[in-house]
Length: 235
Image (cartoon, rainbow, N blue to C red; front, side):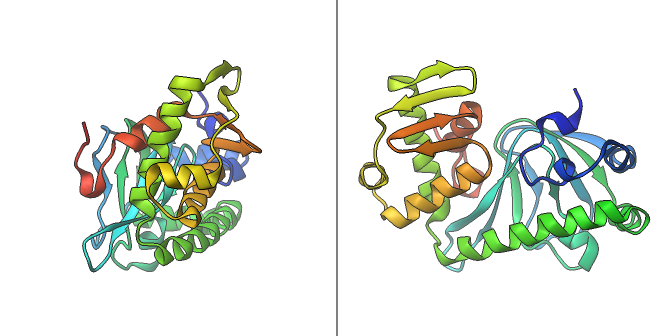
């Protein structure tokens, strides 16, 4: 399967034409990670880069009181660890697989050489970094984002299993709960639930309308709902 075909919107590979994509991946070494494996660790001085071609991961950091803040989910086609490769600074966040994943790993030097030799890849990387920085800043405002996102994922899975209807695009839940109702169900502020839903929409995992939710990636929601802060596994 062509890695480009399954790239999420806004991912690095989604911006690249076939020759640039092939050039990038040809310089990497294929690696696989199991569900819950640490892909990158916050504070690690290593500078290698992963291009994610299959599976989903979560990106997070630990705040002073020990809680985990979720910056976002990354899916097929996205690049991980590029800031450390370009700046030479330690990792600013941890990345953990929420399901089995496949990446192409490049050293920092290889990745920087790619950016120098292929301007289109460099421009695409800038676009993805800019979008991630905006999202990360929003996530820092709400230190409960990770836990609420996990609880919202669990609620959506239950709605899909109990009230969902299979459609070609995924599973649709008609007459679904409002954001206020969802907030009451998961025990969180409506604003926090809205932010969690925004992240899931942005990643193409769900689509929401007036009292209607289309779940495009039920498998990813299940994996997120099962995952626990700091890498432990729920029941």
